[in-house]
Length: 542
View 1 (cartoon, helix red, strand yellow):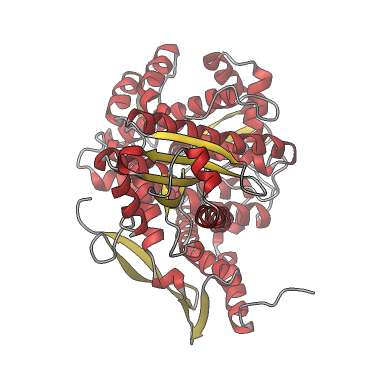
View 2: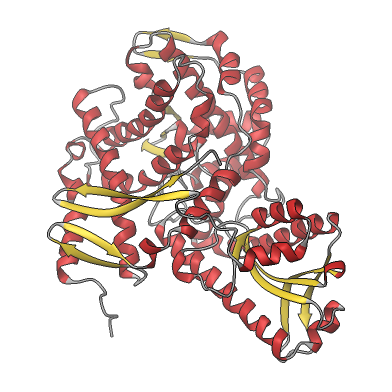
């Protein structure tokens, strides 16, 4: 029996109309290769315009790397137009790169539509899952429920993302200085030379950023290569993309017509790319070929491709392109692991990586906690039947305090489907720690024996997550959920476990609306339909 549809027929009809709005875009009248080129170039234009607008001197464009909101938005909204264009454009005709006013405008309109479509996708998905409600007021779609009433958890994850994902920034002006000697500008195009000296210096320049972006063990085996193999390829793609963007912005500053639009994308032959990476990575060409194939759009057995996961696009047989800033601003290591999980042969490898991540998180916490003088314990509490494990217990004898933690380590969610899946994982963690807390209350002796504590200790329970704390609909009043880095930062600052335990119980770790952020009402329109949605506005310098 099919599950009951939580949306009314009228709402489903509105959803169908919204889903088809893209079909009227003139970009579908062009050959597929030309339309894909134009759309990816339009994505790049968002970054170019932002760089030009923010800095009087276009060569001083290092701050573009700090604009995470723009980057996340472009990387996320590019998903749907790529699928639309590949599904509906004719495959006939070679790619025609470069500026064409009608195609340029159509691609620009497509990016605007895709940006708006993300909010409609979220609203209808959440309503279909029953975690928010939608109702119609004429042509206005009005959401309600916890997702609109309590935005603290959404704001928390966004704030922490800014702190934790603000990778060590590197100065694009420094990279521009490395590229400048070979830059040549002619009319609407520009060129530059990439040799061993530039690649070596660019890799050194990027090293601080790589330390933050690539943190998983290189020896981990994926399905046909190691994570170290893949990281070498991804890092060279990142460097090549950064060099190209630096060259383009310098060319724009030197008067290149159209701000270098005609070379918006990196456009090359697949075999040449593989050979170039092999030269500078030292990895076997056959391994590189497999990795490049995996991160090529629609390859690796992926039926619902995403440009964030597979940024290389094969426009024609053997000819590949990519948008530099989609590579620059993607979480490349994270996306590769997600991609592996989407291929049938990679799911076993993904399961192994997931199990390892929790161990890595615990080991990091233990090292940090021991440096602060706390005692740690983890393992099965044998006296409980059936035996249950404690992921991590933190004991402070001098304070008579004990904090029991359920640890969650998964890849941060990037779209509404992943938000739901990872939220369910946090929900399971909440229920797991609740069970252990109940046993600690009703049958404490086995726990006391394992931890060498007694009834005089204050015991608190919480869930500590490496990434997201989950959406509002999985939260509960009696179990706090906090990011691991935020938890450790607070503990280092306060230096007392009891104060941190009380801080968690009081939910003081969450941002407060009116003090830290505002929920801003936003009307988003596609066609004749308007969604009354919301955004988060940060208040104050912090």
